[in-house]
Image 1 (tube, one colour):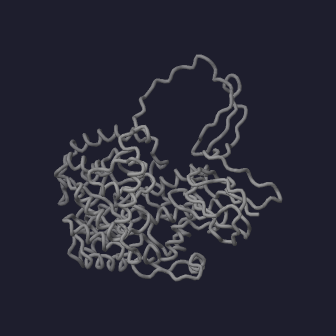
Image 2 (cartoon, rainbow, N blue to C red):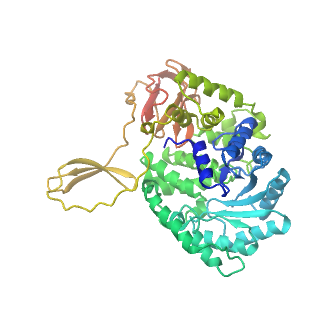
Image 3 (cartoon, rainbow, N blue to C red):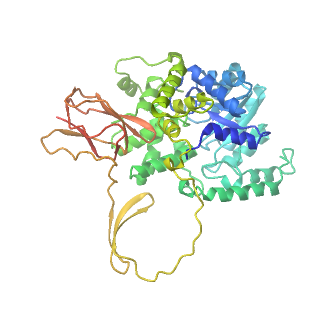
Length: 535
């Protein structure tokens, strides 16, 4: 949209000066998919507080308290509210004691409150009652509960948690609630009215808010997921609401929307291989992308995403139980896994990041914001889209148009039969080529092949000319590592493909000589496109 996130935060605070603003912070990952050095974490928190943020819900996808410590300490040092988080999940490795131990570790680190984050909606009502009761019994701490409505249990879980003594719960205004989101605020307010837990909120005023956002939501109709009610598959797959919509979108981009059920079945298997990690950003995206790779390539772990390898190597922190030993040995290639706090291996990087952004700004004629550090952090967390934003600040034409509500138009009666011709139509995420005869009759219907990439690539090599290296996914070429004429061994990395928000290393399936490199950095490719040939 071309909006400055820092300016947006300041404008929200200006409009709501008395309302505490809260954000999710992924511990050492901040808002990204990798660990950042402590100096970047410290400066980001400082700037977020300065720009108007009040409450930081700090979580770690591995539930590794070492990965939350720097962020929590930074939040408190700048006078904001530090909320430590239990990213709730279930597995043979997770018991009530698991959550009590993590709560104690977070309290020792220093927090102002604790949140139970049920991102998949798998917290049962009775488990919610037990967990809240035991935490409140053992520790003096303000406790919040965050549940998604995807499976249909969230409303019951919130009510049982309230009975058990939880201090706060997350809800959403009714017109923006349910499915992938949260239970409706008005429903809970009505449920608690007249009880000892009466919220005192005015239903009529809430309805005015709901009416406003009912109109806002219409603008974002194109981004709605397929879920219309509840999805019981999540009770097994444990997929968070945001991850489910991402999977639907990603599979549609791969022209494989019909593979969703297979991917949902593969996700628990990948999660077990990775040590029963919780599924919350970024691990939800990592596990989901690896499951997609396993399904689309037709072979489990034929291709291992860079981030999946990172978890296997210990680069993201402790896993609840040991990862799959064979997979770990494969990615370590004789090396040793990381056992310390991963960020301890990172040198301070803020000065280098700032110098790089200032250099690019000078070279490209970019005017940085008055507080240039905000722009530096934007690029540090989102290198490609952040730099694009800086290059095109105040140029709306460079970005997607603002969402608009589609005006309801009366359907005009056709005055003449539909024109004959060949059309491509999309039905439930799958593309079809339709041949329409005079009069509007459909005379032929065939599945469409994936769209060609925006950058032309070479056709598959003819027989005897070598083995083509093809794209396993649709995406963009991040980096071409191999060079023309280079001799490579089986398993060598040839290039890196960015697909589904992850970097996937394309490795040589055999030894050979690189010939006919058909792509360069930034090129878009489709599934099956030939990237190069091994002779």
